[in-house]
Length: 97
Image (tube, rainbow, N blue to C red; front, side, top):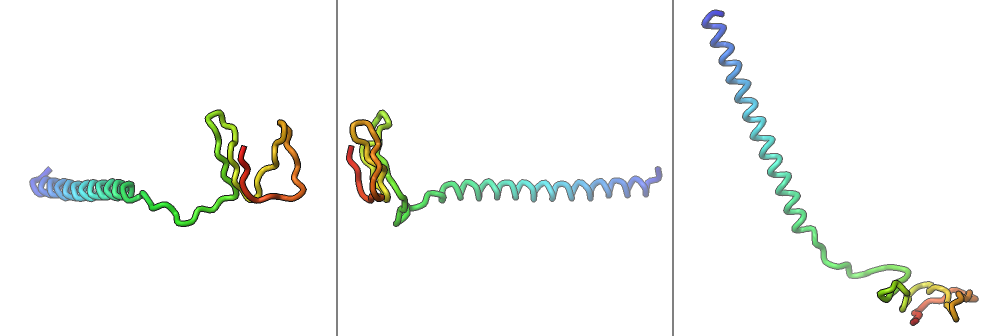
């Protein structure tokens, strides 16, 4: 190889090295920015409780999982002496057990 060819090769390698270093810096900066956005979003993610909560029924259970208070629209059918009784019409309200 002649001296001019070697100089061209060295310059080509320097250019490629400079491009790779710029690309690496951009990649690192983008990664750090992504991490910052995720961390910031996690800290800002806690929202205030809603002003209005909508549901059809709420059941309060004891430690054994037995329903002790039912609030609903409609409420479940009543249980009398261990048997579930049918209602004539749907009821809305509270059931204490």
